[in-house]
Length: 133
Image (tube, rainbow, N blue to C red):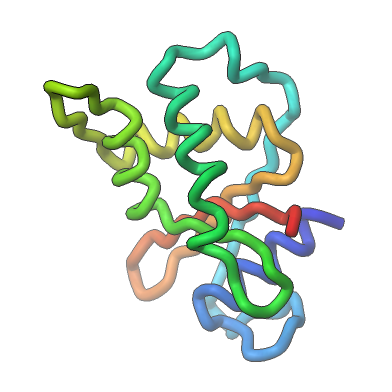
């Protein structure tokens, strides 16, 4: 059921569907990636743990009005990852590849998290979704 919820959240977020239906316009293909619940984040590096905490603390800022589900675009996750890599004297930097890798770790450690991907007009769209409201 959560995969269907994640799909509906993605459709609504990107404006591909005006109603809470699971159908997109013709030519729009959405992939929902689900984790395998096999990972403990406490075993990961401190930067990844900070990233996970930063994402957890950011859901409220990225929650939709309808359904109250969280959805964070990968562009915002790059900023969260950079903050996670920063220290008092160094400003961290991140990129989309690192965020993709770290987001896969998040979905593997939390059964409520999903990654939604779509290609629309030649642009790759990606968001991290939290189906627990």
